[in-house]
Image (cartoon, rainbow, N blue to C red; front, side, top):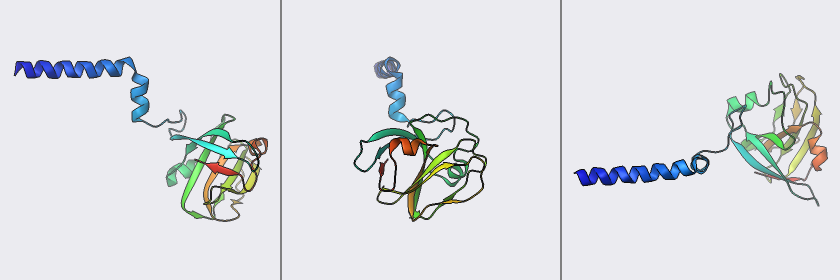
Length: 161
């Protein structure tokens, strides 16, 4: 019995030493990246304009109804290569508003084929006016105002996540 306990003790110590040597690797393998403000999962997004070069972004993903209702409300800053993605399954015609949204945003409506349907550029902060997709959207990507134009995002641009 003592030999068994000793063996188990050594095994636990060896495993603990491996985790202690590389705690970041252990943490990253067990949990997805999370945004420090929202706590939402952060995923890679690639934007490829027609005839253009791909551009990598990081997007918080708002999956649940509650996360989507909160969106970017009350946020005062967002990085140039950051955004928020709102996926819809099944795709549907969607409407957004800017109530309680401090930042001016570009809203990019994406079809089931992962191509941009329409872009609502420079949405007005705090506005309660409806901003609609021009067809069934599989997702909406929100970026800082003007960023869609900087990246060449127009209808037909491919957006992968």
